[in-house]
Amino acid sequence: MVVEIAVPGPLPTLRKPEGEPTAVTAYAGELLTSSSNLDDFDTFAMQKSLTEGWEGDAAAAYGNASRTTARDAQAMGLTLRKISRAADDYAESLTALITRFDGLAERLRFLSSRRMQLISDINAAGEATDAEIASLRQRAREVGTDISSLASDDNILHADAAVNERTMVAAFSSSDSLDKSRRQAAGTPDPADLAMQRPGSPTSEGSTPEQVNAWWGSLSGDERAAVIAANPTVIGNGDGIPIEARNEANRIVLDTDIEGLGLLDSRSEISYEQNQALDNARAAQAALNSGADRDDPITGLPLDPHLVMYDPYAFDGDGKIAISLGNPDSADHVSVLVPGLTTNSGSATSLTTDAFNIYESARYADPGASVASMMWIGYDAPSDWDSLTVAGEGRAEDGGGYLADTVDGLRASRDGDPAHLTVVGHSYGSTTVGHAASDHGLAADDIVLVGSPGAGGDVDNASDLGIGADHVWAGNNSRDPVAALADDGWFGAHTLGGAGMGNDTAEDDFGANRFQAESTSRGDVRWFGDHSKYFDPDTESLYNISQVVTGDYGDVVSAEHTYDPWYDGPQDPEWDRTPTVYETGSGQ
Image (cartoon, rainbow, N blue to C red; front, side, top):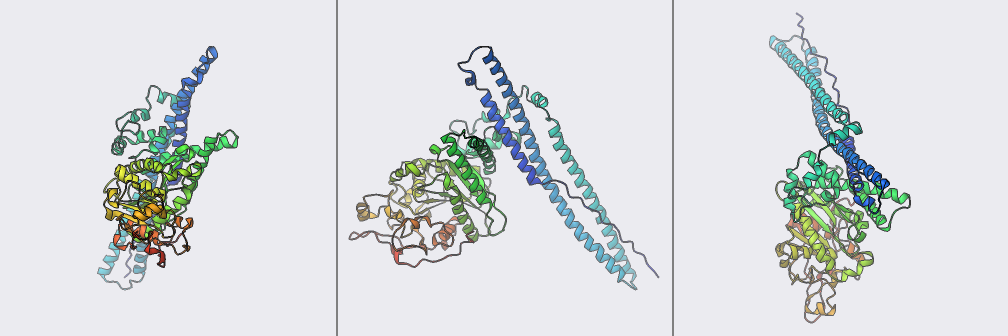
């Protein structure tokens, strides 16, 4: 007897939603940048100073034309913000649609395999029993039901994709002419202006990072887009603002600077200050590019650098830049690297490399935890013509306040449990960290001082830094001449004339945890090359720093402290020890 079993089919042909979310997101960013530029132009064109000292019909006509142009710029800026927001929503929805499609594609592959196996089993059945025939028919029905369900879900997916497309088209169509933009903007106050007037905004006098964060949380999505476009410098450098928003705002300013100042440079119309700013902008972009070229050593995925601070005109042209590899708002372990002598914006790429080395080594130290490693050029470090200021603590005192504000901002902008946060000070940056801690109550869990000339003249002991001496760590290479400037007891302080910035952080009397920080390439005498090796791959210093960053204190390799006997000069037991090589990462 011949028994027929109908095999359901054919399988549906799935259609992947068209579009590339990352390209749309980039386009949305360009629209927001254009909106920001229009906002700046609007502000410029509305200035009464443009016609000061000019009277008569021509002046009146120019003033009227200028104000009309300003209103049109405002209308177009508001329109671009709206479309940028719509594009972001479109990209987010498209990402979700593609994820759904990937799920359908996986179901299709599994369903195809089941159908082929069913056909194979039917062909091999031969003289099947009634029970076996019933089982095959049941499997056929199940495959048919799943094919129908898959086809239905595919149709729903594409109906949702069509809605997403129509929503985006509608956003464009509603504002595809200047007249439409004018009508929409007529009588409508700028939402950015209204938002910035609320208590707690970054421009409100005395706002703390916690208040700024609460203010940000009170804004709608449209209001956030508006204030980023209208006030990117304020938002980008606003302590307490979430890192993603700061990055978006700072990149708007950076892109505008590179394009606008670059145009002035090409026309030979650029001033000295603008030329400095252009150099700083290009340095920031180069550092971001270098960070983006790195991969996470555990996942292999490319890193997405965050521009946390950016002001190319800050500190008399030295500039202000902070770049984080990993997001401090979500990472389990966060480190902030504070550099010292010779640091300015031109140091951004090399410092981003140092930050990556810390990131990579920390990821190897604790592969199951997430890491954010930030380099921070957020104070006026002695450099170039003002390098002689390294002889005093004034720059470190000012920088300590800025650093404490930055760390308070990182604490305030974070959702969920607090991160384990470590601040790493190098060279004069260690003195800056010392002032942040002793003068401003630095909100760090651990403080690491490397190549330190001292943590400040008023810091006699590690306990003075306010986080407990057991969480203060010192790593001084025995060949580092800068570390040798610090005061070592009575004899050291008087023979060196108190040339440092306080007590030797690696000395026994200071009370910090000293860790091994020698380099296998060290010389036979003190030289400045050894002052810059603390973040080199596979070094003792980098290994131990990463153990502190991840909170693996038991794996820190301790070193004997320096000491200063009454009868002789400072003694460093590390001088004769053979340095060790550690595997801290690829060193890419």
